[in-house]
Length: 234
Ligand code: TMP
Ligand code: ASP
Image 1 (cartoon, rainbow, N blue to C red):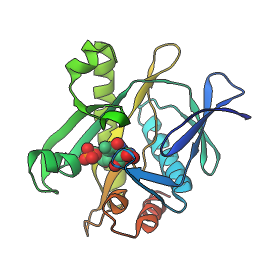
Image 2 (image 1 turned 90 degrees about the horizontal axis):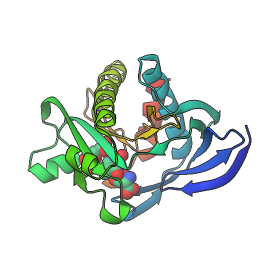
Image 3 (image 1 turned 90 degrees about the vertical axis):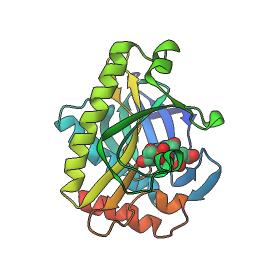
């Protein structure tokens, strides 16, 4: 497949056209940011590790009935995906209290939730991805009611499938962020990536963090943690 012009450069990925109008080329970068780009750094080999982890998890999801944009890995850190019109909403699913939920509600990290929590954020770095609810998504025309229903159902299925899959390799899926988009015929597909950048992953036994919180919180051992996730999934 031929890589065409650069369409968009984000904080973690660069998106290019290809010779197929329905497909895009996604290059995974080593650059890391946190707190809406306020903290910057490089995680050695992150592009490779996230492309690998994402492609494995997208494969697991599609085998379990969740339609995703993933087509194939073109190089070890470049992914071919279906072209989507991205819905500007970040969908967060939580199984355990951590991160912004812990701060916002004053509940200590680590409390297990009695059922998954689903949250929506408006995708805008300039505004710091503000929290919104379903009525904002509908009233602002970001998605139709049937699409929101499809997204909710797919997000909860992703949670069930990945919690089990990661649980089998000793990883607790604490929370994660998903993005969805529409194909040209209006089908909703899971997009973006699923990686230690976009999930909280804790070792089941030790509670050790195997995700981007090591970078956000300057804990060290970031590459080792990402490598450990890939190793367990391989
Ligand atoms: P939070 O606790 O900071 O709201 O994050 C919840 C989950 O979403 C966590 O697994 C990290 C992920 N996430 C992203 O992937 N991108 C983001 O911009 C944010 C804020 C969180
Ligand atoms: N990905 C977001 C950023 O770069 C937030 C985060 O992951 O903490 O700013």
